[in-house]
Amino acid sequence: FLRASAMLVAAAALAPPGAQARSCRASRLSAPVAMRSTPKVPYKFPGMDEATWISIYSRMYRERILLLSQDIDDDFANQMIATLLYLESEDSKSPAAMYFNVGGGVMKAGLAVHDTMRMMPYEFQTVNMGMCAQVAAFLVAAGTKGKRFALPNARFRMENPTIEPMYDNEGKPRTRIMQATEMRLEVAEVLRDKRRVLEGFSSATGRSAEQLEQDFKRDFYLDANEALQYGLVDRLLLPGAKREGAEKGKISPGVGIG
Image (cartoon, rainbow, N blue to C red; front, side, top):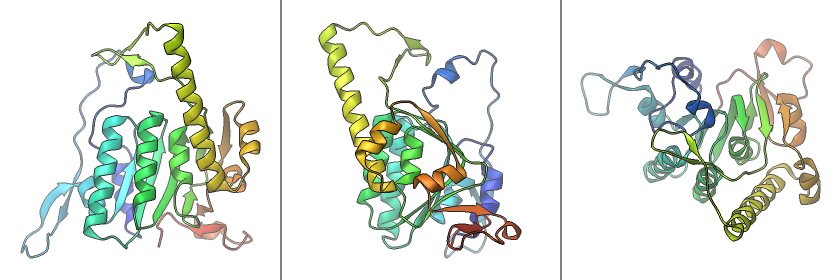
């Protein structure tokens, strides 16, 4: 995975292919956004004499590197699940690396990715590169223990599940008209999702469900060091020169993971 750094520099500024996230922020964009093409890199397939140009994301997938850089909606979750299943069919033993810079997403979609990760026979190395909010923080913590990382300026936003708004064909939120019984069922489902998430965080961090319940009375932020102490990650990735004096086993040099 030492080649991951060079690939991510080219890819970090662009969202991976897939449907646009259904977020309130997107609905507030009034100015037209220019379409950006996916960068391509040369790759020589086995048995071929010449290299061909392929999507940088396809190239990263061949190295078992997944970049998650958009809100996790149903379409994007399905894309990630399909990729994880393909990696299993190709090589069920080599680990996969997942790099996150995700501002949130749909809880149900994120839980589907989480359950698929748990089904896979290979290990997961997870890295928070910038911001991981809500279900994205949950997925970073769900990586293989000892292989969960964060960059120095990374942040975690720990959020409670909410009732997902409905959107029209233009991606704008629309009012939901529900009876009291329907509202009660929606609230019960959200509380059930919260219990699932807290159980997952308890397993990932070693904290009791009671302590997590207390912490999640309000949404809160954690910086990289706080996330390390909280148990969301196992190490911080820092430049080699800054490792001196750091606790052994808690700091790793660079962003290449091996």
